[in-house]
Length: 211
Length: 91
Image 1 (cartoon, each protein chain N blue to C red):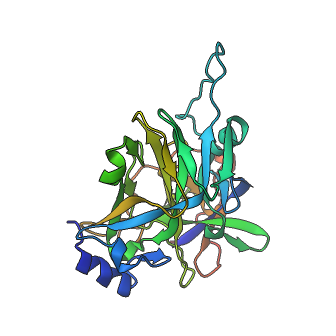
Image 2 (tube, chains in turn cyan, brown):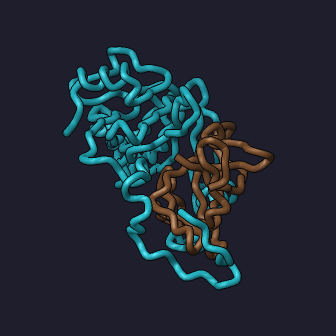
Image 3 (cartoon, rainbow over the protein chains, first blue to last red):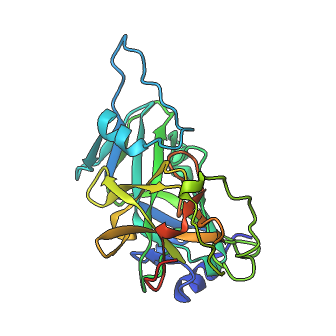
């Protein structure tokens, strides 16, 4: 079930969700909260003409996209005048706001685009809108949460200016039915929901420990 | 809530880092997180994670990462010895 503006404000007041800095009332609509664009942007460098594109293998366990971006991309602080997102461009950005969804709140979220940008052909994620319950949560009291990664693309014919702090996306909050396992170890912790992998005996502990 | 030992690698900007978590096979799984999301304890750096289950007999735990890893993984089996409880005690 999607939270209404009243429920969103109540959740913020009760610390069931943290958004830092706190969005103004004007950023909250009937069923969502507008988030703004942070100050850093990264993009993949264009392939040189006639050069074969680099093959990547994201299914492999040690795949490290950040190292690849450091080697094959550019990161910059958005200039005051904004970043011009050209037709066909794809960049990685962040929300300016930090988000925390404690497990116990039973809230998850979706980050979605804004129709004003969609009409220009600009999207803010690539089929990965889900913000899972527990996002940005630690035990540190008052920890504000973490920023949301945005995958911003332009499939329209115009170059679209993206300045810092522009309203870039909206967060839609949803109730989670039940409490995720990872939030509560209690009753189910010892039921081993998955068969553990086999490891070489040299790595296994020699003594059994009591639970 | 618990924390898992991780390696820290440079990120792309001022506030982010890439972290690697070793599973029970010593394979590293990379995630991109905000630097201040990590916790430092006795010169080691730990990533907040959820613990789904523990297998004390085999000395391992199934953890849920705070977000999808670069490899697409959400959950990993890690050695219990790499976990730290919220109160700072080893798992």
